[in-house]
Image (cartoon, rainbow, N blue to C red; front, side, top):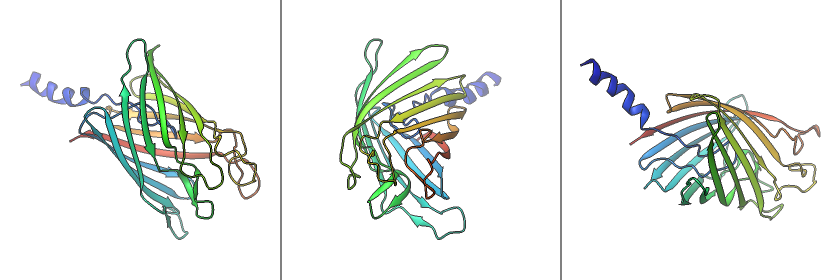
Length: 246
């Protein structure tokens, strides 16, 4: 009886090997197992909340949705996003000992507040993208990622851009991550959004039993863009993610 009860506790945990779906703002080649799902809540500046749902299909595809807004927490009148965000990803090439994984996808969800005049989020959505990723065993797992994307938020600027990222396990529960978006589609020096510095983000994630994670991130450490006082704007966000299997 004791042996059976131990297996009942251990087996559900062991079957959930979670790959990172995103780092901080940039996508990876990671997917959910078929029938797996992830529920996320992202707490952003200006009282912002962004809820997301991602679902895995056939161990090769992922689909998801986002919805949220600003001033959800606070005293101001809440402003919801103009539309539901959508994402999809297909991994065309699995990683092996010599070659990286390769995936293509689409994500219409940008981050932080939405500017109706410019028809964009402060941090533009990735839009259509391709990304490669490779993992190495170096005192734990080290993941390296890089990609190219074309955002549909292009009223102010209309360019392809590139991004890179990295994540590193410290132990089975702690993961450090970082990504950098060169923001070639957001470098017009207009004193409003990107000013040509790109967006550098760093974060730490605490994983509970491979299902629930808490993440704290520092965003825009390059001080790209300006706030109302003309100062570079670094932001902090907090994310909660829960992964399970249908």
